[in-house]
Length: 138
Image 1 (cartoon, helix red, strand yellow):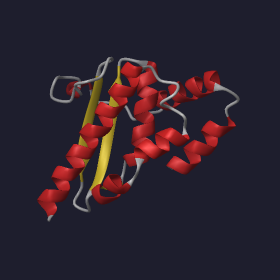
Image 2: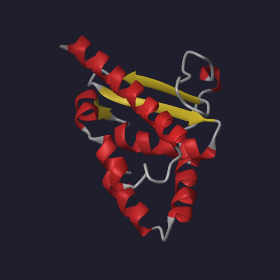
Image 3: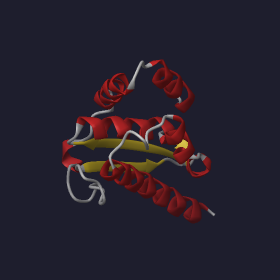
């Protein structure tokens, strides 16, 4: 799924209750996270719920993201991030304005401040990793 397709699907939801259900469904479809990686090495700081991310970059510079959370809603938010960034080059990840996309989805007005801060922490972590990889490849 692409960010544009997800936006269209979001727009088809009648209200925010339907969007929450859709987010939870997206989270349920995330690739299974390896249980061996459910430890502090992959745990993301700054999130109200536990969030684990595993980021790998292949030789073509494409990032692969595995993610999970102990919260159904947060797993749905992780699914949004995966849709935006997974299998994209680090250059494309750094160019993509995810905050503008979140605004198009009207996420910020619907999330609690702690959920918004957690989502920002996840995005910051991925962008930081992408910047490091980009610098190493220069």
